[in-house]
Amino acid sequence: MTVSGNGGVTVETEEELSYAAALAGLPKLDPGRLRWLMGLDPLPSKVWRRIADGRVPPTRALPGGTVSSWRRHVASTSPEQVMERCRRSDVRVLTLACPDYPARLADDPQAPAVLFAHGDLGILDAPTAALVGTRRATGYGRDAARLLGRRLAAEGVVVVSGMASGIDVAGQRGALAAGRAAVVGVAGSGLDVVYPPESRDVWRAIGEHGLLLSEAPLGSPASWFRFPERNRIMAALADVVVVVETPARGGSLSTVDHAIRRNVPVMAVPGPITSNASLGTNRLLADGCGVAYDADEVLVQLGVTPRSSRRRERDRGPGRPEPAPEDRAVLEALDLTPTLFEKVLARTGRPALELASALYRLEAAGWARSGPGWWERRVR
Amino acid sequence: MLFLDEMGEFPSSILDGLRQPLEEGAVMVCRSHATARFPARFILVGAMNPCPCGGKGTERRCHCTSAGIARYARRVSGPLLDRFDLRVTMEKPDIVELMTGPRGESSASVAARVAKVRRLAQAREIPCNAMIPAGWLDELAPLSAEAVELLSRKIESGDLNARGLHRVRRVARTIADLNDCTGALQEEHVGLALQLRPEPFRHEDEKEKVA
Image 1 (cartoon, each protein chain N blue to C red):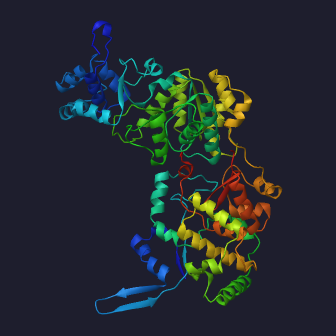
Image 2 (cartoon, helix red, strand yellow):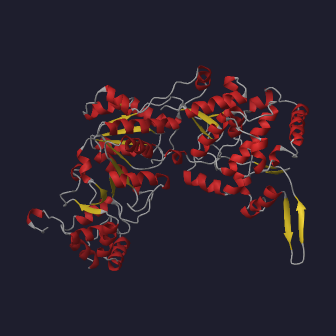
Image 3 (cartoon, rainbow over the protein chains, first blue to last red):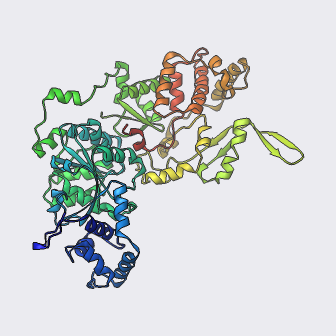
């Protein structure tokens, strides 16, 4: 690839990309600062030189201490080694000058100046839906996320999410189970730092069949300040943002803010009015967000025509065997949220032996789910 | 009987020290010239919150992170948790119910039931069902086909391990005895035994991994 200097349009060489990757690793950095820094010169190597030579213009927003820490970092870091580490992990470095930089992000006013990617960037050509929500999801929320993820992926929609515990990872597991469309995971940590540990299986699966993206350089731990930034990338990549479950305050609401600012439609899944975990999503609905009570509603929003209903029935997977008549009453006594065994005992008035059997039968048939001492009804 | 309240607050060295007496019914003290064996068969009762904030599974929501719950759970080692026969999750009692609700059974009637089951165990030539040696389980606590199926399902889903399996069988034996069923253990006995001994600290996300 050649470097051209006309009109400020440059095509990056491997060498320039290594400088870009190294710049992304500067201390005391946020996306805005990195954008500003990279804007000082079309060539990342020249920006690197500037820092080394102390020619970074002081601004009110940039304390002297920060600039000195940058000089120290530049003096002790080898861009070549940074790039080598990326190559070993099969991670591509992208800047806005790269032709492969995702088009959806390139137009964004807060586009990441440096992006780390692992997997197939071509995936982003399909319609995309971000499935987001709380880390402290209920069984209902997880089921809803998984269901939506699977149906959307079965129709060829690419599911984008953050791989966080709870809703994110449930939606991605659903999408991966459909096996038809690819999945995009946007990480808050470096692509070699699996976070949270419970999502390891999803990271691996997306790494093999989908696309992993991060603004953070390799080796970056999942720091709390990276997550709101990660959310803006998800909103920018999405054709629609679907919030599955969130209480009144939650990180996924920042994704909603980013979506609104970019005119990306937002939909929310209704939840039980007794559930605190759905208070945020129900409020979004009250504020006028689209209602994602069915995957079809999301598909309509995306302009995707669902395939024939017969094929959809097949995608839903084998139905659950109907519960035995004597077990129906026990199922009715369960809620969508956990209820302690003793309480179910009191509600049904059945003897404990009979109740335990009935519950395990319902669990085996997929109608109920259990945890330490509690039971709840499964949506799917 | 030894009752440890807030089990997680005890130093792990103390809790570890319980393993030998729990497993062997004795404490060995070894010195260079002599070894002494102190009989130490006892019933251990422990109490703990399901998570550090105490709100998990109740109407008041739990505020703990999964890492926080894992840290809290680790205070009591896995092997020690495994040695409990019963691990019952209880609800915070309602004050009004406590004051006005119906009285429970009298200790005398409960004691009579306990005595009856202990007599049944002694007829099997063991002091009590909890002490049925693993090798005798097939003979003294045989399982019906449905009971085996239920246990296999639970083992496959990771809800039950080998040590847990033996304990569940012993508890199921006692449940069956309490219900005047001295033959093979049925699915309902095993079901209730399982209900009384679930895995206490398990993160929901762990249960649903992609293959």
